[in-house]
Image 1 (cartoon, rainbow, N blue to C red):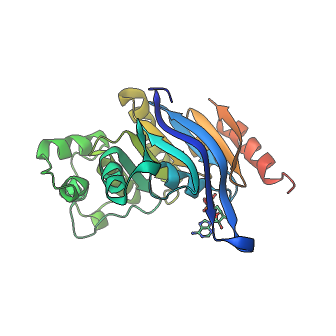
Image 2 (cartoon, rainbow, N blue to C red; image 1 turned 90 degrees about the vertical axis):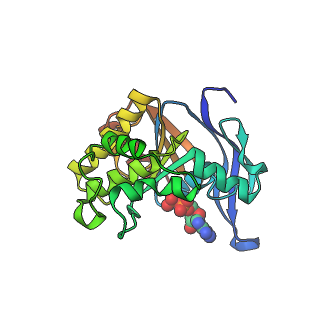
Length: 246
Ligand code: ADP
């Protein structure tokens, strides 16, 4: 593994069930996500995208193979250490914003630090909210914010711990295209401006075109990749994958 890799998966397989009903969600996947890059993961429904993200982020354990975050082999960690690593070194945004409705934007953003037993500095919370363009919304509750603003709060919450990697599972899936683009532009800016590493599952070629690399999964295997591709090229490749005969 090179020091330039934020995440490395080596021969990662994840099987569910046993005997005849075994499903191989990931089949010997080897991949690296270099630091300071933005990668989109695409593929037909059931191709293993969520499983890949969950294994890479330490939310799920592979059946075999290894996952490294920085220099740390996740497969060797106890549950407790894995939880700590996720809390301190990994950020998440999901399709659903998952904000706590009774808390203000600032309190939602500060929550990961509180859960880790750290006292969040007001300046840091303000800085992260400003980074996502919500410096003037700190005291608003989620119901007082638009969908795009709520997702930006979720982004700020994911970034408060300065994670080594930010994972997104369809982070723009619940947003209209203009608002989705704003969130993608923010992610792109974090990669370009701050060297953040971003890995995002999406089914949307326009969203994937914001990434540096696109990885295509079919039946739990990496079937191809594109670098620097536009939305049309990505869409054409997707159509191709979905018509590959079984
Ligand atoms: P995608 O995100 O690309 O839709 P998933 O990673 O969710 O794909 O699923 C990959 C395969 O693994 C599918 O066949 C799915 O049915 C199966 N799978 C996912 N999670 C489970 C589970 N908890 N139990 C059994 N099978 C699962």
